[in-house]
Image (cartoon, rainbow, N blue to C red):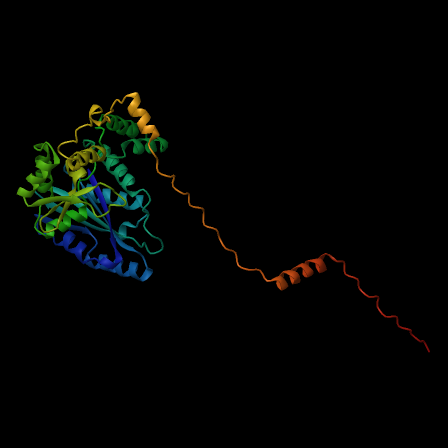
Length: 355
């Protein structure tokens, strides 16, 4: 089971999410098991009233094997309890596409008296997905955090589940599974009439048939695709993205082709290096020719008049301003008065007469 999470900002509203979840045109059937469009919009209004940055949390889960509506609803309730949410406030929609079903869970960020928990949400969602697969007897799907999840399950006393996940983590490849594009990018591409999974396969195929970046760029140009340096040069130097001719983002080069960043930087350096390297300098050709002279020529050279030595320039002197003698005398007198002890005159005597 693959689980993805996205948080919808309050300023964006619930219109785009409502259209995708409740009115998806590519779905064969849409079943609303809980919640409604009004409930999502009301959650956005409450988040705006509370001054929250995020108003809704969208969690999509796609099982590899068939699950009934009751099993999908039970899994959605476990997600609610994991993040301290109220299942009565959730919106659960089931989509049927190409004969398989997947669920969309929408939770309000504001839970009447607290905010929905978001700490380590990706790892916790993977843990719930692995536990659900073990509970239903489905094949386990490798994730990025299997070792961390197995360690946490041992601490919770779930030794059997931890052993299954530890065995899954040991057989997965060195490159951990990662998504080539986000769900938001997928929705944006669908609105523009693009099929991101098909384009991803196309890019991977073009890279597998290319021997260098130059031929890969030419192959991309044949399919109206380009590769350029990313906009975040300061945070991710060297990262390149692939986009269409009209500027629609397809994804990162390293994510689409599964090439490590260090290896890609080497390919970039080879691409920018000149085709022919400069020939090395021959030491023998750089030697200065020496002319041998006789003793007579040497004495003539030594006895020849030489030019007078160049006169050395003296360093520039800094001229100090003239000092006022009266001010200097006043300052000396003040210093002498400071060192001189002060003598206070005795107080005058008063003769008191008592009558």
